[in-house]
Image (tube, rainbow over all chains, first blue to last red; front, side, top):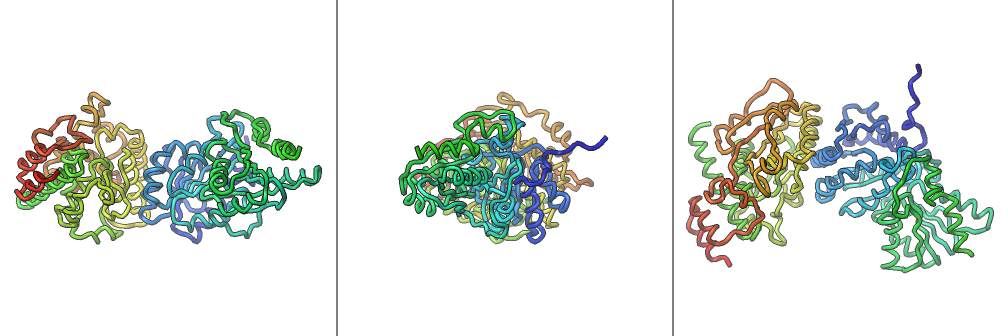
Length: 317
Length: 286
């Protein structure tokens, strides 16, 4: 009998990109260690385990302990990357608060399985609240890169950054839309398309969906909205948002996350305080997920490319 | 450990008790009961085992560490260091005041003598495991001690940590249970009984010792006990909540957070044989 095909290890996903990136970067940065809660196969950390078994700390299915342990390790100068699924990072949220955030310790929490992209495992595993929760913790930087190229650069940057970081990876495969050599700067957005009237702000894997949708719009309708990929949810690129607000009539935020507390909220906060504009928040509208393929779910919850195209068309009517 | 050394430690811990209660009195809030139960353990570690003489002790990497996981007993840490003249009495007396670094629960920021920010039970224990893992990984010397409360044993995180520390064979880890049998609202037994705690911890693959947590002789013996295995060590220290002040001893109400009256602080200080200058100071405090 052949071994079963493990879905987790399919190439091209952000979690695999994370696993490969951290393994590469750890070759030079000897302070990097990984903490895992029995999910190395699913978070991409199996790459690291294979190469650096002594720097890989298995913590078992006990995330609360793992997060405080990682803080203890950071207090003695290591750079711990504590890895799990996003929902289980939330399980240790209060540990992240006191042991990491309140003490400003150099721990990176990297979580896969964010949003409906998690797919068939269903609602319990689909974390649609992580960006909101971690955004509320002082000292935390919150990231959601969009592709494998950006993931590598982001890992490189956060390994150097002193302080707590929460970073979302992803389960499904995603194409590269950014260049491999582009340096990742925390707090900077990336203009993927310069357009008019509408400014779309997206994060994570939604950015590649949005880019495809814009290409379609250009072809079919000769409509070209601006598209900004916002890999840093906190601190958000305030300067860029204000600049764009002056040039556009309406904003659309586009994320695989609850509409409360994530990218949509972060953009709304900056604009309403500094450069008020109309904002349409596209995200999960305070609903619970369910089983299904990622594509099917994004369609049903109206955060796929088609939903974005319809939203843009509606504005033009 | 000889009698003269025990006498010195007793004097130090008595002074630390006086400073703790005074700082809680001045703060107008705090948790005296649990401070008085763990203060002999802290005095032994800081004065005799770690031999801390200056603040610079805390800058070294190869050294012993203590994490107070029951963070509400923070004054015990500050006042022991003040009794050792490592910190100044006039500074630690600003406990819980705005602009003071002496926070109500131990906080790591701007305080090299605090290893971990604690106050949410269970976390300091896990933090100590992280430090012990790191020292082992980096092949550094020193042991990591933590003091945890008996009510704290009800946190699930503690049992996660107990499993992990045994799994990773952390022989450099020592956890001391300040077993005063009382928690915030009542006796452990009336909330959730943690017994049989010795059997429980033994079954988690730790070395377990049971001592009188107010006997320096027994504390010394347990801390220096050598084991021929790689297991972490758990010391069940039977203690008395409110130890040293008769009207506080074994009384659930003295857990806190509470405000001490002038009468209460003065009779506490008299019982602890504090010098008259300190008693006068309290009398004149509005």
